[in-house]
Amino acid sequence: MKTIEELRSLETAQKNYVPEKVEKLSEKDMQWFRDAKFGMFIHWGLYSLLGKGEWVLFNERLDMKKYAALSQDFSAEAFDAEKWARTAKEAGMKYMVLTTRHHDGFCLFDSKASGYNSVNSAAKRDFVKEYTEACRKEGLKVGFYYSPMDWRYPGYFFPELYWESAQEMKKQCWEQLEELMTNYGKIDLLWFDGEWLAHGGIGFGENGWMRDPDWGKSRYLRVNYFWESEKLINRIRALQPGIMINNRGGWEGDFHVRERQIGGIRTDKPWDSNDCLARSWGYIPGMPVLSLEQLIRNLVSIIVRDGNYLLNVGPAGDGSFDPEHVQRLKQLGAWLEKYGESVYGTRGGPVQPGVWGGCVYRENTVYVHITEWGKDRIEIPETGRLLSFRGLNCTNISLTEQNGMLRIEIPIEDRAPYDSIVRLDYAEPVRWDGVEAKEEDVYGLADGLG
Image (cartoon, rainbow, N blue to C red):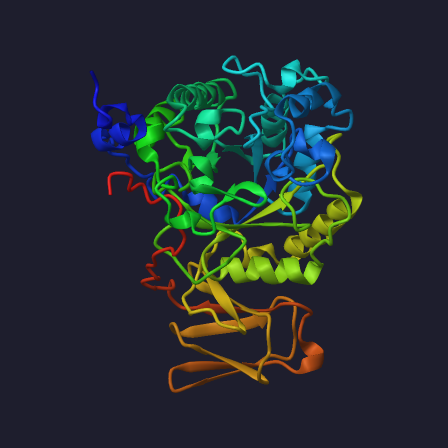
């Protein structure tokens, strides 16, 4: 007869797990990402029909079977992948990331691992196929979002009690990633989300089962031993050798995700800051849209800290973009068309950013982005022998050098709205050691053995 310890399948899996070694991509393989700076995130699925965000199934405690029946209303008559891709390109974005499957389990692709997909919906279309083709047509890099977890499986919420169900969910995850990495040509980026079990830790209260307030410390958060994350990453690498993978798959990742935050400068590891154009990831009508000023300030704050801006748009259930969203993106694209030289193909530095803004550089050139004038001048350290300077969108610049500092002054009437950009050209290429940093969030620690 087995002992109680032998009947604890999750604990046994953790105890016996030996992770495989995973090699990170080289800087050369990730250079496109560092150069791109700006991408479009898209959350779209059955939840978009209800207009209450991508977590509506769980948050509203909906009947799983009735929710699944929404697939027969998912005709997506306004879906146009080429229009999506053109909108991204016109906004100045260089890559896209689409939710191929979110936590509700519904796939936007033709999955043999699950019949719960768009090909079996009213639309009868493989949206991922159309999306990848549209991205390539517009010269955009292709990114997939994928959630390993699936609310339809009791074993997700209670893996100890429903181990067989949990294992079925894991099998689905492996098979679907195999499909995504095999059936759609070259994929440039994989954006994992939801690598936890039981939402990282849940408890029962007056409102039913909810995520524990201290879920970030729960043993259900770091479960690479359950998914066999490192082995899975190596399988993905075998199918897509150059693919960039984030830190939300139970592994530390090639790049780090800073969700709804920017944080400090970090140059030793690529990272993205992902946030929403209109507050919610999944479609909610009537949400306030970020102003052009907010978008420019966000983008600048991110690039001067050496990160990428992944900006989310949530299409309506029919697949259409809100016209106000499209208009705002076009405005940002027009700004980038004029001043993109100070954004694309640059690195954050060689000056520490501050409330005033920050700098980026490329070879012999430094671009100073000034978004806040707390004083009438900005002072930054000298970084070499300065040959010339000029404003990209501002005039009457006064620049003086004293005691190893550059002082930049621009009359109020000659400053640009939102971001005054000054180009500094040096005699030699900029040399800077950069900034190493550690993230303070709880994702991607891959320490299931701890």
